Image (tube, rainbow, N blue to C red; front, side, top):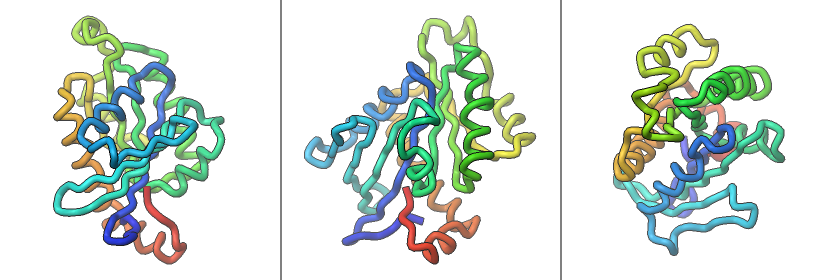
Length: 196
């Protein structure tokens, strides 16, 4: 569960995905729900801190974006995080293959990630949505059932900006509930770690 500091819960999210799958666009959609004075963008531009109130709770939401598993501090940030978003392009076979062959394997074998994994399917080109869609929700559910790494899947290419904002707010609460259910919060309290 999120660490509490001066009445605010600290919640850390890592956003993973290949280049040009819509990570920054997705994050920027969320930023529109926040007053500019409550947004802090760091020099490396892949780290953002948001102060926001929703669902009757004040949050400090820390978002760090990674396009490569070789990037500096990725393991450290993942270890500190409350949940991870993996974004892939539903119109691109390489992006879909990398979802499992690159990112999921990395989380399973290198990180042994035990928090909530949320996979987000985006459309790089909305006009290709109905012409060339690599996967769908039913297939992703089946893959989650047989995968050694459990995850939940949401399609975001068909969502409006407001729907994306609501989705992220709901996913933060879901990740908190997951940590309590799985006993991760108690474990992290003992280790004195903060949650993403």
